[in-house]
Each structure stands twice: as C-alpha cells, then as structure tokens.
Image 1 (spheres, helix red, strand yellow):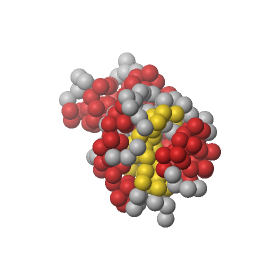
Image 2 (cartoon, rainbow, N blue to C red):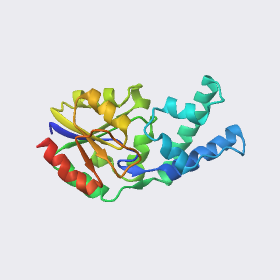
Image 3 (spheres, one colour):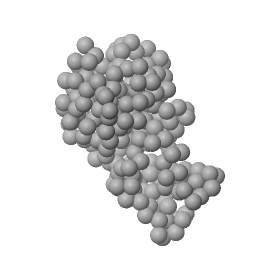
Image 4 (cartoon, one colour):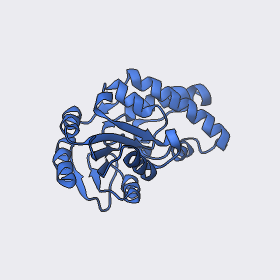
Length: 212
C-alpha cells in the first residue's frame, strides 16, 4: 500500500471538456427551455470548478430553486452520457505523467462535479487503471477540502499534495492542510501556491520534490 499520494483536480488539470460539455448542456437545455438556450465553451470555462449548485444558479438565474435543480440535473445526466462518446481533450503528457507518478504514489481525483462525471472521464479515456480512488461533490455533498481529507483517511495516506487550476482549489487544499500545486495551464489563477507548473510533464518532477 502506497502511503504518499498525488490527488488531482479534474477540469483544467487533467482535461479540457468545455466543448463537449457546452454541447451537451445546450442540447438538453433547448429541450427544456426552448431553442434560444445556448451555452458556449467560454461559458463553461468560466464556471468549471464551482459546486454544481453555484454553477446552475449562474446558468438559470430566472428559475426557481426547484426548477433549477430539475433542469440542471437533466443537463448533467445528458453531459455524462455525451462525454462517453465525445470525451474532452486530455492535457499533453497525461498518460505518461500518470504512469510515472503511479510507480511511486497513490493517485486519486477530487472534484466538485456531479456524480458520474469522473467515471465518464475515466471510461471515455480508458484511465480507470491509473487511479486508486476518486470522489466528488455529487457523491457526498462535500467540497474539495472535505473530500481531500476523506480520501486521505480512507486510503490511509500519510502524505499528499493536490494539483488544481483555480484559487478555489487553493483555498480548499489549505483546508485539508496539504501542499497545493497550481496547474497554470488550466482555467484559473492562484495566489500563493507551493509550486506552479506549466504542464503535466513539469508537474512530475515537482510532485516528486514535494513528496520526497
């Protein structure tokens, strides 16, 4: 059992799914709200990393909370299905980085996404064998800080780091009290990360330095 871990954010860190996700939400949204409903990849990029309740409030501000939940749930279900046949784009060097890191470290994913989204990522890109665990907001209602701590406890991890692309990731990682590496190639910014990387290839060396 490996006692040291690399825990990954998903969107903006492992892949960019903004194009297929926007397509899936637009298709589902048109069925529920009419032909004028359109979401673009830029719209999706602006909310990636937010808990689903905050994301749906931004996209459907005029709907009641109950109707917002119903419509967003339909869109998220459609998104998970769509991604299995139309996956996002993995960042360069993904499989090589996972292969090298997996030799020494337990690999996990923690995301604020809906239930089934991490599975769509893993299955569409055939990556299940690389990861020992994953959890998201849709599984248990916890934000990333709580779920990072959950992963560390249930997988008996003595040391870990988290890599994510937004300041929100940075805040949640501090709650979990582990080092934070900023994926500067992703969607957002960070204020005071323990390290910042421009690619997954670069991250391999940084992770090994922090976890040594």
